[in-house]
Structures are given as structure tokens and as C-alpha cells.
Image (cartoon, rainbow, N blue to C red):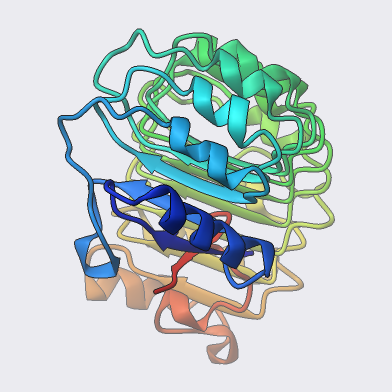
Length: 313
């Protein structure tokens, strides 16, 4: 999914706002970006200013919005003036008192990205129309609110702290799951319940020692493991339906791959990088040369995270 945004400046007149809103109505763009970052793509805003977002009244039909303004103290104007948006990306706020309660009124949202903003995060639990969710920097008590989002198809969990994935075990429609650098996470057993899962990406999970039995996940096509140095067993992968397997930047024993060749009947592409050429070569030796790839670009299935933003002039 691609979202077309226009980066706007922080000093537009009412007439200029109305002109951009007309571009949205005509379908030329999906929405706007208000950000202190990305100067190469358009105007940037002050990182230290608490902006009033009431100018969003000009954008009642907006479909997508990105807000990366650390010093703002309220997002009330988003719910008041842009309550029909389908895509919302919020950067981290400096003040932890900024409430996410207004999100509860955004009933049309199907894609949401949040970074470390925790106050009233329970507001997301009622957004059952969400298909795509990205959560960066959250702990277990915040992740629990994902459990009610039964229509989720894509989920990213990164740079958080929690021990297991019990919060997502009932997400029966989840197709794409990416987990990156989560402290204390060691129990992945809840993955066994995700019957619709097609793409699984695991990265820098230091305390994970094994992959659970994924042989019953009949829809699973792609498994990517990056910097998974704690892995001591790959037996859970045996008998699975995966077409693609990538294990890269991971200093693990190549002998773990010895019984996977005959144990992965649908494997079409394999990409390995075990920290040393000799170890990688040894692991490859257990497989037919026809399945061996060189980089992640050789993988067919899309492992990119959620919606992609395109900035338009």
C-alpha cells in the first residue's frame, strides 16, 4: 500500500491550505505531512515549537496525515477536523502528558503508526477497523491493547519490552508480522495460533533460542531472521509450508540446517549469512543449489513494513 503525502510548510495562508485541500479532493494526493524531518522532500517545521493544529479545519476530507512535531501538546484537532482519515502516523512527543484519547474518534482508520506515546493508549483498543498497525517503543501493558484489534493484517512491534506474544495470539487475520529488537522477549509460542500468517520477520531478539512449531501454519510463505544470535534450534521450522527462508547476520551453528533440506518440502529460496563465509558455506551444503539466493532482494514475498509513504511536490 502506498500513501501519497505533500509536505507543507508551517506558515501557509488559509487560501494556500484550501488549495492543497482541493488537491486531496481531486485525488492527486492522499494527505499532508507536518514534520521537522525530511528537508529533502519538502518544507520542515520547527522541532521545538508547540504548534496549534486547528488549521486542519481546512482538510475535512483528508485521507492521510503524518505528524512528526515533538513539541506539540495536543492532538485534539486531528479528531475534531480530520476524523475521516484512514492513515495516521504520529512521531514521538517530548511531553508524556500528550493524550492519545482523541484516537478513539477516528473510526475510519485502517493504518496507524505510534512511537513511544503511551498516555491513554487504551484508546486504540476500539479501533477495530485497523488493518495495519506499527508500535515502536512499548511495554507489555500497552501491547495488551492490540488483542482486540481482530481485523489486523499487518503488525510491526519494535524496540519495546515484553516477554511473550500472548497479546496477539487471537489475531486470526494477521498476515504479516515483524518484530524488531524487543527486550526480554523469549517466548514465541503464540505464533503457533496465527493461522493466516504469510510473512514473518524476526530481528535482534537476543533471548529467543528457538522458533516454535510452525508446521501447522499452512499459509506461511516467508520467514526472515536477522541477527538472531541466540538461536540454538531450528526444529520448529521443520515440516512448515515456507517457500522462502532467510537467516542473516546470525552467528549460529551451521549444523542446525543439516536436517532442514528434507524437512522443508516447499522451499524455493534460501538466503544465509552466518557471520563467517565458512559457516555459511557449510550450511548451504545441506541444500540443493537451485534454492540458494544471495540477498534478501532474491525473496519474492514482500517483507516491507505496512504502508509506504510517497512524498509529492
